[in-house]
Length: 308
Image 1: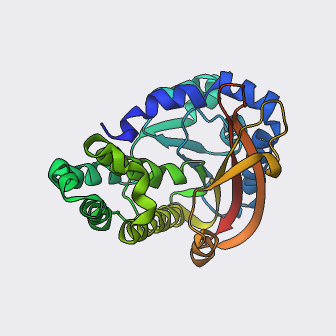
Image 2: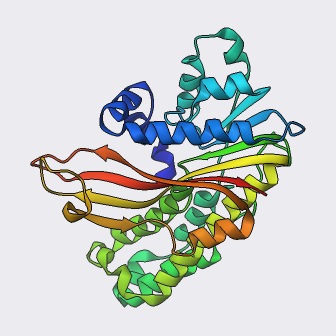
């Protein structure tokens, strides 16, 4: 089973009203910064541009100020694979008039990358490769990533180029490449679990994984640009670095945590190659508090306001 097939379960844990309340208590700046950037972007649309708004990776709109978007837009379109979460987000709107302005579209905003990769992974004889050793396994994994089609930009049903005056990518971009890469590692773990932590020793695999990330990022940026109307604005919210902190009861500062890079170093350059930067903000959010039994987790986030 591909990791993306577990999306509904993971979203139940990480999204919705209960999660929003948890964030208000433990990471209020995350909700404040995310919402404020989106609201500012609404006011940066040119008067002549489309008054429709699109949210990619909408989920339950935990970080997205859906009320503000619905009030300021002719229509708000939510796109995600998680249909129940989007329905929940729309259902939280107390006004029937606002609910009517929110349209829901279930679609894979990567263009089916996980499915393409799954077919390539299924063609490999992983048990036979494992018998040949680590190099054979990771060369095969690299080949799958190298050959995986990445639609650029992805085609989303019912969405036409230039339809939107505001396009928001809501903390979804890193999932578009991390889930497929985890699928590759799952295939290796199932056949050769002893090799699972050896991927960093194999240059071809590392290069293939990094190129795959860059292809996915570029395709996503091109999707945002394609869907924007002339005079429109895009907001890109993305995790850029994870961190874990192991000391129970301490602050999650740099001296008590280990950083985990999530995006290539070239990520800011990729953004600047596709868009003109209007505004940039950085902040952090926590997903789990540390306990005596397990470390806490969090993410560093970048928020971009962009125009073509």
